[in-house]
Image (cartoon, rainbow, N blue to C red; front, side, top):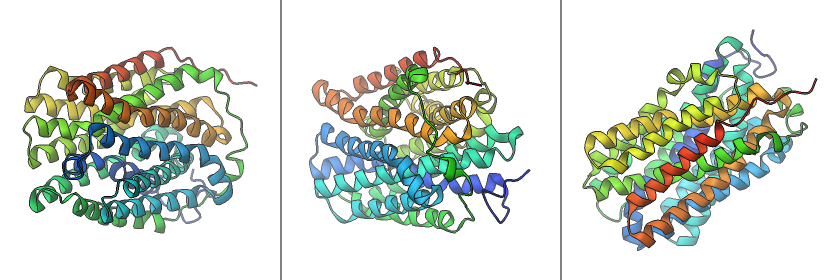
Length: 396
């Protein structure tokens, strides 16, 4: 049965959620992760250390954390749909700013803005997607997975474009890549602006429910470690592939494999995401994510790196999806925005600290391999902690 409070003109829930998924496609798939593709050229051209390069993702993550902290207030004042749309437009603006200047402070502001916008789009979009998915309870987990597979589109698109732009225009052409990413983001933002999305009764109840941290503190700790661990892999793996001798084609193939495997998320994990048993689903998926991140430890062969990208990618966005499934199983709809925001804040703190810490480790030991080992260890520990989360007993 469809929900008229969500959209007055009926559109199939899967189509609406796929349109919503374009918000994190722009904010995360392009706005955050495309940076890894241009990082080596920016570092060489602008003479950055690994710490400085990591700082750019740290400030992006700090913006994401700030956006998560402000999400409830933004949703209450402007509504979920407006938060998604304005957040996505902010990400487009940030990409354009990255293209116009090599100034460290301007680039830092652009990365900060992208983080704030991505958080607004992700929390508002995730809550709307969860609400829309409820219109088809028998397929809710599958429908919700479509939202979290969305950033794979951005990863795939940027992977097919950025390395070849850099190869075609030569060293120092990082700013041209940012213009190309801006163009991609504009195209993907148009459907989000035109879709028949309506807040309905969702926003009225959204921010009124309380969220208690104590019952889920161990789960939040595991999600914090996921945030700290995954971002190092996504920030520095392209540099690792390049240092291993991989040219534009190898870098494009590696990045595209992560994006392609993300599309399989909804099908691969639908039964796992249906497990209403505390943190079990997150433990399983995050464990697979840790295995994918650990594979480069054993060598730099083409096949090993390809398997690493596929395994990491298929689990990466599913971890985020598992936390929303956890929220949906354990809290009433009125508490979803607050609960998703709390999860995002924990994740945001982790990914704020992750890039600059791993960048500093890399500078200190002069080894990307060692830094990636630390990343994989954090993901594995996050999986272990998630295993101890029990289902939350609801008050009558």
